[in-house]
Amino acid sequence: MLDLGYARDADTQQIRISELPVVLTEVMKYFLVEKNWNEDDSIWSYTEIKPLLRRQINDIQKFLDLLEKKPEKFSDDDFEIYFYDSY
Image (tube, rainbow, N blue to C red; front, side, top):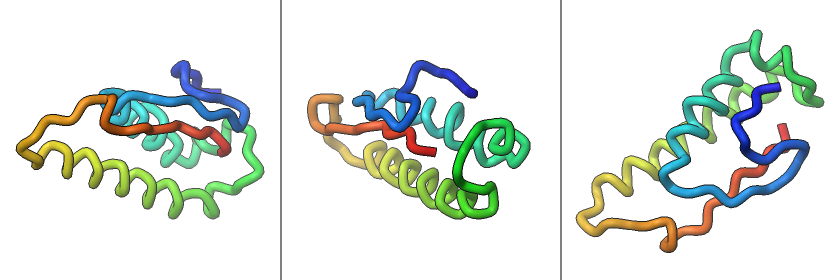
């Protein structure tokens, strides 16, 4: 199991905005590789989860892109973001 210190075993953990790129690259994109997905123990097949992972990655990236384009700066206090590992 990939362990980066985020929530495990269907648990929820609050994360910071600055951690979202790490969640994208080190967790979400990691599992887009079929071999990586199949090494983990999940009730979902790779075929079932792949479209969902792609959509979630896209949504998180859009959110980060919007934050970058805004003239005002946002802090972690402006958002409550949770990582829920249920894969």
